[in-house]
Amino acid sequence: MDCYRCGRAVDYDRITVGRASGTVAGSLCLDCESEWLSTRDTTSMATCFDCGGRSDLLFPRWDSIVESDDGTGSVETEYRIQLTTPAACHHCLHR
Image (cartoon, rainbow, N blue to C red; front, side):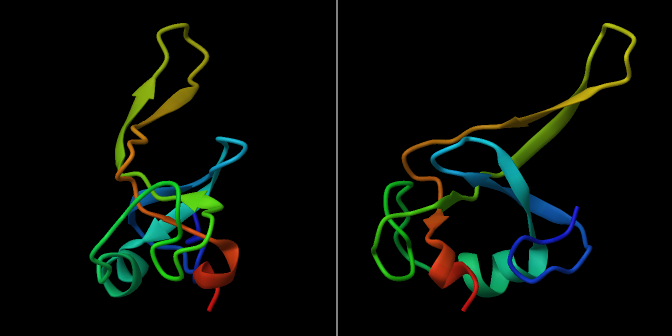
């Protein structure tokens, strides 16, 4: 999965989830996580950690992939969104 912020196809630890829709929009690569996301002191899913405005995207940690038992080979993602899940607006994400 390509990084939602920089577009590189690399390993990742976090995914990008649309706050309003709840759909997985992509991933956040390890470089963007360490250089952009983890440099912020405060996090709240309600506000952008960069500008303090309303957040559009959430970045929960990717916990695991669970394969279904129904024989279809489908997989489900596991992640938890909490009040302290980092979030950003579209503008700050692509600066």
